[in-house]
Length: 316
Ligand SMILES: C[S@@+](CC[C@H](N)C(=O)[O-])C[C@H]1O[C@@H](n2cnc3c(N)ncnc32)[C@H](O)[C@@H]1O
Image (cartoon, rainbow, N blue to C red; front, side, top):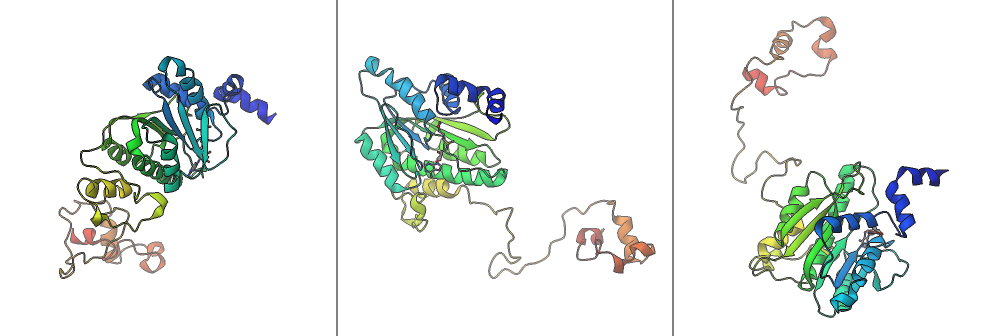
């Protein structure tokens, strides 16, 4: 009963089984290719977070079908934490994409040749709490970025990554725009509207002049003890920005001490423009003069109009 009702509900789930795809996600890549024309000329591709393998299936069917006309052997590398059933023409690496060793294994496989396409449909197990899911997804994405940029001498084409489109997504776009001239957010029809999932398609890889890729990227293997001051040229600015985002202003969710600068005493500054005849003015007046009715006597209720709680009201 459960199975047939899911079949009826989700057209892509049903179609995936009918067409022999391992997961309904296959349609997301097919539709993204339809929109962005991802595959022409691609002979070397990397599929990050690949299990159970429907994207690798798409790559295998689309790219290997063109092998003869392109006259070059197609190489596809699929990476996932989990084991995956074999696929024709796909080399599998069972590993963690956040590890330097995984990046090195991919590089070895391509034997110094640049990859044309990197796709990533990585997703941690979702909790259903959007803020938490977005945060965990962003961490995975940072790892993908780290891996991508650490292998980037090998990558010359398109990068496609699953993202959760939350409030911090513009930071991600800014980070990606450093390296690609084309950064587009896309939501294929097969991605459920109820999900904050989206995909970012990065085209025309063109790193800034002077940027030196290296494998000691501070995002990989959680070695956050990298001394940023050792970085030179554009790396001095770009690497911390990729690692941490824009840290140039105060964090609005943090509480700071009143005395911000050592040696500069804190002085209270009244509001620039106090409210004019606020609705609570009369209540504060009554309360201050003990004119409130008994039920609302100050001793029986928490203070809301006290001097400390309402400096603005006091100054009116
Ligand atoms: C949505 S599934 C990918 C589906 C796949 N694109 C397909 O079409 O079959 C997400 C995958 O991300 C993998 N994953 C999550 N974190 C990972 C990590 N750190 N390293 C490698 N794979 C990871 C999970 O094991 C899971 O198989």
